[in-house]
Image (cartoon, rainbow, N blue to C red; front, side, top):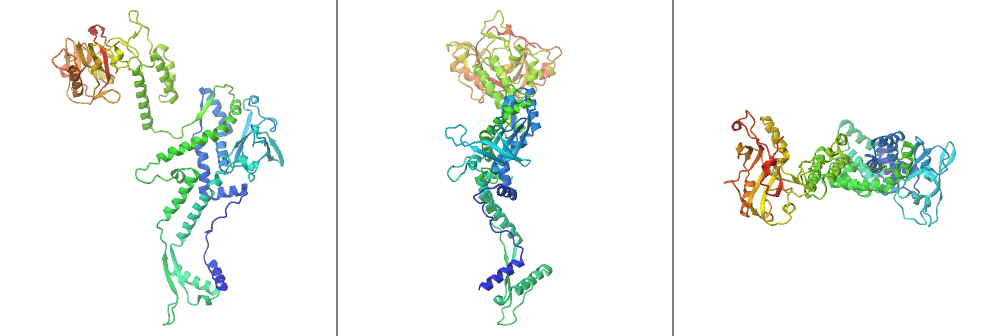
Length: 629
C-alpha cells in the first residue's frame, strides 16, 4: 500500500502543474523588515488595506488660516520639501510597522533642534525612514519621567557609519499602543501595533480563497479516470497512460480510452465532473467583508464596488469612514505635523504666532448641494434678522465675514472694501426730526420689518410678532401688510412697459387689513396658508389686471383666495374695512406715465412671493410719506 501511494503521488505530481493551494505560513513571532516587506508586496489586498488610510488622510491635505501672502509662503515651503507625499509615505510605514520623518538642518544632528534657530530655508530636507532603518537607543525607563518609554537618542547608518540623531529631529509615526509586559521589548512597545499584523490573517484567507477559485477555473471540466489493475502499474506506465488520454482530449477533442473487451473485462471508465460555481462569489465577498471589518475600511471603499441592496447608496458607510479618517487625522497625523510646524514655519520665513490650520473637508459637495446649503444659510440669517435680537450693524459684519470664510461669493471681500463703512454695513444718520429709536427704511438685505408705503420703520422688531409693535395689547386701529419679496421682478416689468418711476422695492406690499376700528391685534391669530417661514406664495398666472385705484394709484390686482380668507378672518375677529369688497393688489405707482394705455397693458404674470405678516398701528397720514424712484 505504501508503494502504491508513493507511486500514485509521484505520477500525479509529474502530470499536472500544481498551483499554490496550500496556505502560506504564518508570520513568525519575530516581525522582521523582510517579512513585513514580503507580505506587503506580495498581496494587492494587503497594499490597499495599508495605503487607503494613508491616502485618505493626506489626499485633501490642510488649509492654513492666515493672510494670503503668508499662506503662499507656507505652501511654497511645503511644496519645496515635498511634504505631503512624504507624510503619506510615513503613514504607509505606520501601517506596515512604523516610520519616521527625519528633519535635516545645518549643524550637528545629535544636538537638540531649536525652532527659533531656524532661518528662512534652514530646513534643508525632510526624509522618510522605516523603523528598521532607524534604531532607537537608551529608552527612558523612569515611570516619573514625562518621556517615559521614549528613546533618548536615535541612530541611523550612512556611508558605512552610525550617526546619532536627537529625538527633537525625529517625528515618529507609530501604531496603536500594545499591551506591555515581559514579552514585549522597549522597541516593540515604542513603535506600537502594526496594521499589517492586525489584518494579516484576514487578508491571507481572502487571497487563498481567490487562489482556490483561480485553480478551479482551470478545472471547470474535470475527468475522473478509472483504470483496471491500477495497483499493478508502475509510475512510468501510469504517467504514459494518462498522458495518452490527455493528448487525445486536447488534440482530437475526444477522450481515448480502452473499452471493455468482454464480459469479465470492465475496461477503462471516464466520468465527466462539472464544477459548480454557485455560492463561490458570495464566499469570496464574505472573506473581503471580513477584511473590511478588521481594517475598519468600508467594503465599498476597499473593493471599489458600488453599494448593493435595495435603496443602497453607500453614503452611510462613507460617512462612517470619513469619521474614522478624521479621527486618525486628529489623533495620529496632527500631533506629528504639529511637531514639525514650528520648524517648517521658520524655514518658510513666517514668524507670526497668529497662524493655524485645519484639515480640508474630505468630501466635496456638488453644485446642487452647495446651492441648497447656501439657501438654508440665507434662510437662517433671515429668520435671525426678523427676531431683532442682533443689531443690524453687528449682523451685517458677522454675515459678511461668514460669507467670506465660506467662499460662497468669490470676490465679495474685495468688492466690500470699495464701499464706505456706512454703505457696507447699512448705516444711516438719524434724522434730526425723528425719534432716535427710528431709522429710514433701507438695508442691504432688503429685510426691513415693515411700515406702510414710505413710512419710517422702527429698527430691530419682529415682523411677525404683533406685540413688538405696541406697548400693550389694548385695542387700536390696525394695519396689516405683507412685503413683496420679489418686487425687483415687478419693477423690471413696469420699467419695460413705460413706467418712469415706481414705488421702491421695499415699499411694495399687499394690504391684508386696514381697520379704522380699534381691534386687539393678539386676537388676529396666524394665517393657515403661510409656510414655515411665514411667507405666502401666489402662483403664476390666474386673473390679473392693471387698473387705477382711488385718485391716482396704479395697482396690479390679482386673485388670491388665501389672502381673501385671511382678510375675512380678521374682519370677523373685530376689524373693519372701508371698501365694499377686499381686492388683493400691489401698488406700482401714483402716477400714470404719459402715453401708456393701462387697458392695453399685459399684467405681470409671474409668481408673487410675500413675506410674513407685519402688524402696525394704523397711520392715517401715510400718503404724505410716499416717494417714488
